[in-house]
View 1 (tube, rainbow, N blue to C red):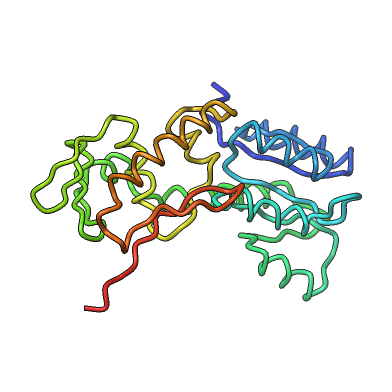
View 2: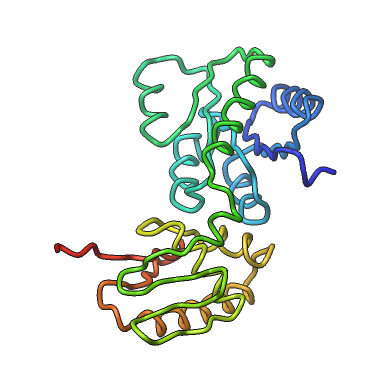
Length: 238
C-alpha cells in the first residue's frame, strides 16, 4: 500500500518539527521519510525514489542550499521545496535560483503545506506525457527512424532489430533528447532498482546503442561522469 502513496523526503534537523510534520503528512496520505541532516538525505536518495523533497535551510554540516545543489546535480528530476525561518528576499531568490519549486516560511501552517504539496504533485504528474503514448510513437532520431512498438531502428534500407532492453533504453533516452537522463532514473525505470551490477549492465546496453547509431555523425550518447547519459542530436542547418 505504501508503494502507491506519494513519497516525500523531509529533511529537517529540528526534532520536534520533523516528528510533527512526519506524523501529520502521513495522516494526510503521504509516505514520508524524515532525514535529520543533508548527508542522511543524500544517502536515502541513493536507495529510494521520491516524488518531492522538503528541505530545511538552516542545518549543521550541510545547509539546505548545499543539499539543493547536490540534488540538482545528482537527481535533476526530483522537485524540492524549501522550509525555512529565513525570510529575507535574497534568501528566497537564492532558493528559487537553485531550482526550488516552492518556498515556505516558518512557522509552518500544516494545512497550507499539504495543499501546496498536493498542487505541486498534481502539476508535475499532469505535465508528464502518457508512458504508453511515449513508448509507441514513431520518432525521428537524426537520420534514423525509431519504432518502439516494433522494436526497430531504421537507417535507409537497413533495419536493426532491438532487444527488449535496448528498445526500453532507447525509448527512455529519446524521450529526453539533449537532456540528462540520470543513472539512477534509468535503472529504477528499467530495472526497478539500482546497484553496481545493474549499472554495469546499463553500460553494456549503452555500448550497443552507440554502435547502432554510429552511422549518423550528428548523434552521440554522451556520458556525464557520475551522473548519467545524454542522447545528443545535433540539428542540421538545412
